[in-house]
Image (cartoon, rainbow, N blue to C red; front, side, top):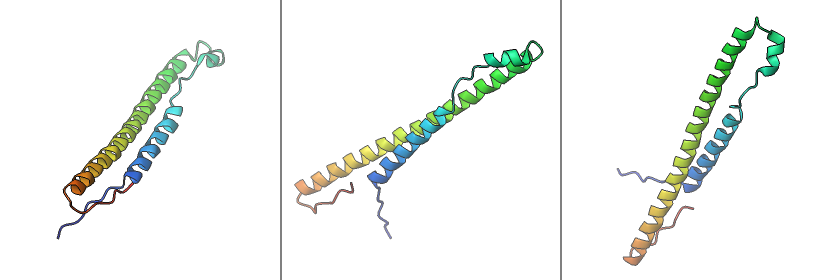
Length: 108
């Protein structure tokens, strides 16, 4: 039995928009933290702690930027897939129509 494959460009576009939104939300948390105000609180005794805290926060920011980048890439790939599918589907419908075959409805 042959099964029919169906793709919904609207679903792919919605997925792309969702991934872009997720990337923006994650990226909003990847902000640089100014530890200068804490230097007065911790003084010289806490300098090592603040240095370590700065490194930890820098690594966190880098990880969040990487995750946001992956979500943004998924968004772009999903949008490209929707555009490619729609383009091929439209081209196939036009080819069938020129050849006198049945006119296929395009899922928009």
